[in-house]
Length: 309
Image 1: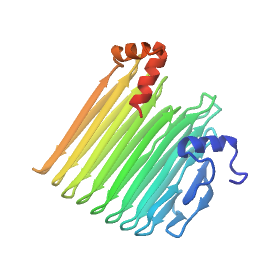
Image 2 (image 1 turned 180 degrees about the horizontal axis):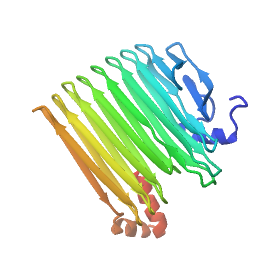
Image 3 (image 1 turned 135 degrees about the horizontal axis):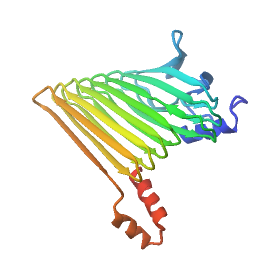
């Protein structure tokens, strides 16, 4: 890495992308609203948009098991960064995309990143998408992250999405939209932890438009102190299709978690399932760990860590 990357940047990058050094494969690193590092490969091209901030990522057909890293970091207090990234995945390609944003804010003004990512998968393509969000800093300015993900799956394609809010994010609205054609599969796993006065809202909106399309959405969250979380899931079965969505949450102190599922079957062969469970940590779980030498506080943390794995 060149001198554009300092120690704080490296810490943020390591938290959201596990980047000790510049990785193999294609990458684009964005800092404080500007691209600062980029590499393309024979199979992956990255092009700066000309009409708005962001990049277009093109993956050639039949590309196999390449990594693409597109992390964003913000260290400037008072900055609102909006970026539009579009991914065009060629036929039968199979790639892993690592994204996410880390914010370091030591001052009084709010820092915010809104990332709008759209994925266009051609027939037979497969993508694993890993997204992490993280906030840190000693200032009282808020760290705000509002990711939007849109997924468009053509016949025979599939996408697996792992989204994790690690810690330190004061406010987030997370929107995920999926439009699925025939023989497609969309799997989403979300993990969120909030504390203090933090706020998190998740919105899933998935349309199963093709025969044998399927979606599996799992949200696991922990809310403590006075934090608030809202989970909204809307799944529409417009063809012979299957979906399973579940929201599991642990609450502590004065925290609030609300889950609002909606499933709409517009086809006689649409099979749509939703499950939700919200509650506190069971006392017997804590007691069991305390018999093994854990303090009550350590036992609670151990249960939370296991829940969010």
